[in-house]
Length: 109
Image: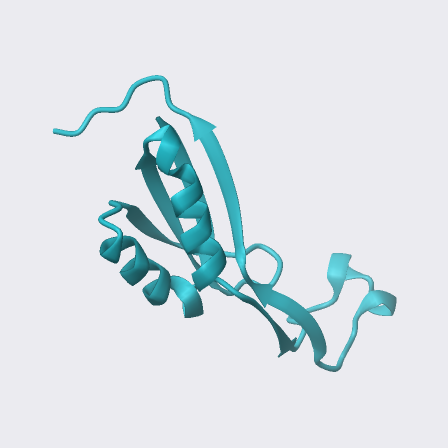
């Protein structure tokens, strides 16, 4: 068994969740917030058999795309006014950050 932890941008969350349901893959999802852009994410916890991990990774790749987005900085970084950028900058957002961890024991009650 493996635990797949997938952190997905909110814009991709519903599409990804629907794809998991179509493939009969159970998941627990939690609302989360990114540290850099402070934007909404959804974190999925998926307990899955070793032989189905690739299926989950394929679903993630097909449903969670990165994109360019203009963001306005909230405040100066580190409190130094010299490093503050007062205009919107284009950054890459979306996609997914995925961790695959071994599970010693798995129970469903």
